[in-house]
Image 1 (tube, helix red, strand yellow):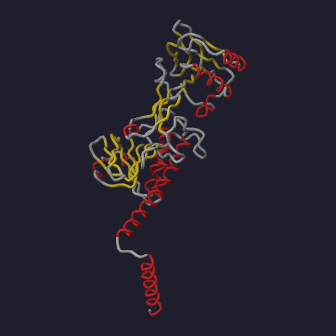
Image 2 (image 1 turned 90 degrees about the vertical axis):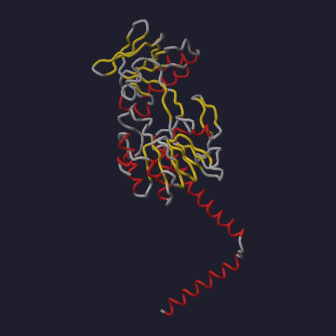
Image 3 (image 1 turned 60 degrees about the vertical axis):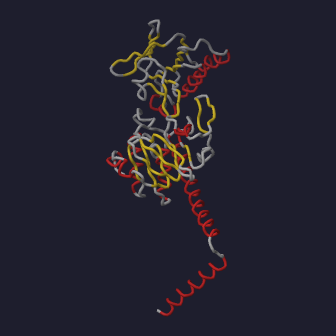
Amino acid sequence: MTENTQDREIGMGNGQAYDVVVVGGGTAGLSAALVLGRSRRRVLVVDAGEPRNAPAAHMQGYLSRDGMPPAEFLAEGRRELERYGVEAVRDRVSAVRPDGAGEFRVALADGGEVHARRVVVATGLVDELPAVPGVAERWGRDVLHCPYCHGWEVRDESFGVLAPEPFNSHQALLVTQWSKDVTLFLHTVRDLPDEEWERLAAAGVQVVEGEVAGLAVEDDRLAGVRLADGRVFPRSVLFVAAKPVARGSLLADLGAEHKDTPFGPYPTVDETGRTSVPGVWAVGNAASPMEQVINAASAGYRAGLMINAELVMADIDVEVARRRAGVFSPRLEAEVARVTAGARTHELTAG
């Protein structure tokens, strides 16, 4: 599964049947595919090539991979899948439809269609950013979201925190662990609860009221935060609480149950990622907005284990049903097996 393999046309496999189709080639999807490939399953990964952390130069906090570029991490994952015959294509899944027999028809954006016994949705999420000029352009560089992902690299710099919602003041308190020079920009927030003002004062966080109109950039680096009234506050890093929105509607279209969260609806899943739709799993950021890369890998792994076990038992149940429907006696078959084994032993002895 080389980089070139990722770009080939899905038409090569049009109409083919797979044990599992994984929708999404990020960490969670590739992790599920790895487990399933090692379980001798026929697996197809359909990857649109839009990982959430693509704007970041490095990923952090993943034991043994700390500081690795995200694109390099995923490329290495795809290379590992080659050993186990996992197939991958660069495409999108436009629809997943039940086939009426407990399995699925998976339609692809290029017009192809494949069959899957089970489906893993690992489509991730999209970070919706505040509509402040300059924020999107500098996202992942010096406009950041997660202090656990980037805090060490910018420690002791001058931090700004943009608060489009009142609860975002929590982020200003959190980042004081990485820098004591923190300014909270209330932006469109008109006021905070008294106890929150008290916490901010105790933490040494400066609070600036007024709407943020844009960013000041010098030599391609963040230099400050500009308010609508013209004031500019020097800052070298800006933390922004993006709104994580689940990507795509595959699960909703299948009728999967969802739960309301502060970030919008997300699918209801069990500890392995199983959704309310039999045969469909959701993993990584497709199931939770809180997953980091290392958590997403774990989620994909757990899903892969459960899917393989379920398929093993499903195949055995089919064979049991087939035997029950025919002329079958467990004692008779055991006797046949005993006699056959004895004959083979005799042949070995005679030889």
